[in-house]
Amino acid sequence: MGEKIKSIDNSVILKSMKDVFESEIVELEKELKELYEKYNIKSSREMELIECKDEEMERDFNRMVEIEDNLERLRKCLRDLNLKTI
Image 1 (cartoon, rainbow, N blue to C red):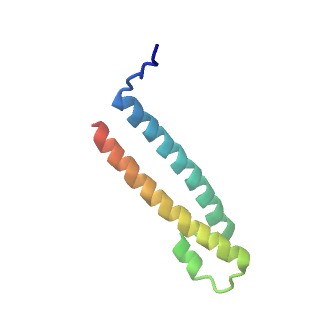
Image 2 (image 1 turned 90 degrees about the vertical axis):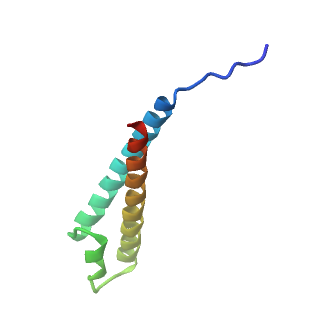
């Protein structure tokens, strides 16, 4: 007997993707907030204005920029996904 492939409703897939995006956004926002608090800033742009940068600050700055970019992409994907579920 051959195995049967079960059909999965698209809404289940979309909901699962939405859950993954939302949880990833929460995690990245938490990490970004911690970095901002560490330097008492509100964005990576403020970090650019800080004169004295050591290796740790440079790593943190690069991570901030990376997180901000990833958050922007994830939010765009989530918006697109939400439009498909309407």
